[in-house]
Length: 308
Image (cartoon, rainbow, N blue to C red; front, side):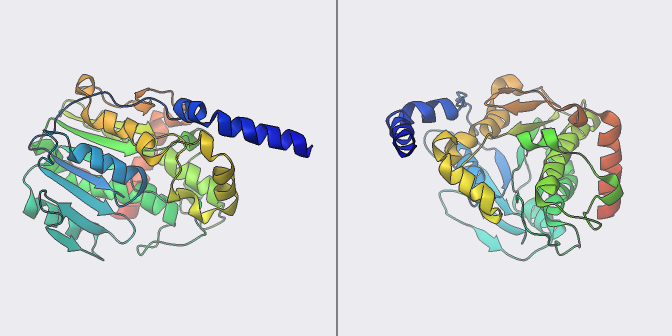
């Protein structure tokens, strides 16, 4: 048995370059420039968000064009990066509405919004607003941020919204009877619910924005080696054991980048992507009634009314 294990381990090491090439998936081949464009990315301090920001920032003669806005969910920190300066200002511990007011003070256009920030399988804890953390950060935070910025996006059209979801949406369902997991909590199921909510939000928002020249698409970045699994000992162990089969953060960012810049997607909306190509969505992610019901429930929880 030990000999077999050693043989398998040796083969994995020998074929590691080929395994990595296969697991990396497709690379965004678009050479689109973003001269003068303004991009806002949530959760861009690490992982695929950071790699997405780095890629978008250097599009144009090797220099950073326009602005890259970085919002870190959870504490709602806002970083406005305007190169060649490194940081023009840093604001911490602020509310979403305050963050958006500061965005509008600094820039008069917003061309790309990438709702990327997320948490995964964390212990039961609530956001400052009293929401279960995974639904609060992964879905409700982005729902509110988009609501607050939608006017700016429309005025900047053509504009794009990219919502980072996950393959996990396939095994998720929206627990309308206990949306905030107050009755019972399972970290894995709560994560899957939040990722399904991402898909439903993107599809419903795309429907509502039809004809506005603001497109909305969701993406599955793939299985990525990142800090996202830090709250789960089991997932951390599995990701360590099978690291050769996982994408790097740079590889995982490619589909977000593709949906943000690819010229051929300028009018495509309401779709789901993986590996820089259209991907299937689970039946529960295509249910229009569920999408509308979740939209209404989210608006009620946040105390907002979409009149855009």
